[in-house]
Length: 193
Ligand code: ADP
Ligand code: NI
Image (cartoon, rainbow, N blue to C red; front, side, top):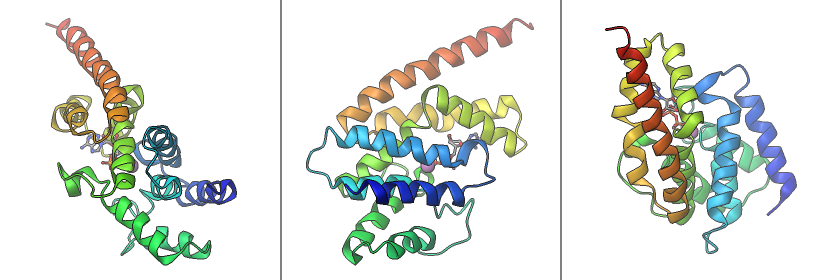
């Protein structure tokens, strides 16, 4: 894998996400990249360059943040850096399979897509997942109580949808931490009765 290209992609997303806080900052994409590479180590048949670039660029055209069509931000970076057309298409396909709301239980068809989807979902679990959820709730003016609902509507469902064994193992541990958090939250909340 070309380290210089990866560094350039990291710089590109830092610029792109400048000014975004909490749920969707550049650090989310950097963590998804690290998690994806860790999962990729257990899937030797995958194309690591596709995994790396798809992970780094997976939110570069998120409709909640950017008003782009057809992965325009991701494509701009890939084309500027001379990535072959076939590889650009594989990366865009992997990116487009990531979103939970768009794909729900549909698994991506390529191994690279499966790895990036797992990595993105792992970043919604565990301590980081809890922090992102409350950051998102705050940004959208939601109460703490209504943000807790999101755990039941989405976060607690993620562990059973992981594609790869490596992600399943990490998800189990992070899921257990969410459950522990909710138990403590309820215990503390009930003290007011
Ligand atoms: P991503 O695809 O990168 O996970 P999302 O936009 O789905 O991005 O979510 C960003 C973060 O905000 C995630 O941690 C997610 O769990 C959280 N989030 C999304 N929707 C809500 C919501 N309605 N209430 C609270 N947190 C949310
Ligand atoms: Ni994401």
